Length: 226
Image 1 (tube, one colour):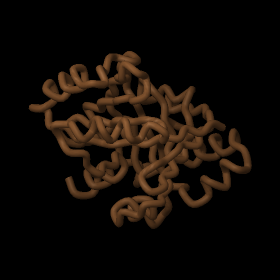
Image 2 (spheres, helix red, strand yellow):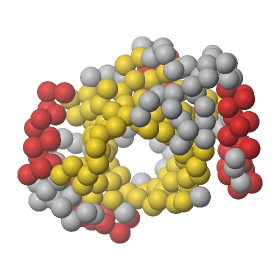
Image 3 (cartoon, rainbow, N blue to C red):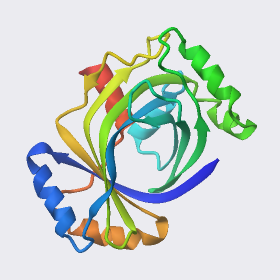
Image 4 (spheres, rainbow, N blue to C red):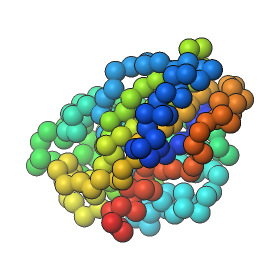
């Protein structure tokens, strides 16, 4: 188990402003540069039967929890996945992370079997956190670009080609039928809690305004309304 404390700000970027924003990041006082090679990110989000996490986000509750399983690269290659519990408290948050192994390559394995296999790998503490969020709601996938400031204190990610795979009515993981989540790129600026002032100063000079944004909430909206 690991914990990762941080503060983050999200800025949706229209495609016609993307190059301008990339230039702003590189030429800003923070001098952002590439940190890691870009890669695809896959996340399965879980919720209660009543969609409690979705409702909490919509109502703007400052203290909320979210559970997901995340892995990288191919959508079915989840052999090195991570179970993440995202805890958010008044704008600041941290993640509790547990390693997992999943096999989405076999299309005959049901969601209930995957969940049992996941739970067999976890500690009692992790199982207690999982208790109320037992239903796979959606699988989100996007391409992520990684940048970091010259001082190493602020990280930036740019998520593009976002799509969502509805899992609500599937007995087995749906990795083939998706919906696009709009023509924009999501910029996330992140830092450790002690560098919040540095991040706030950077954002005060940003050409675009920050916005509340949840890939989980937006994904559910696209599944229901689009």
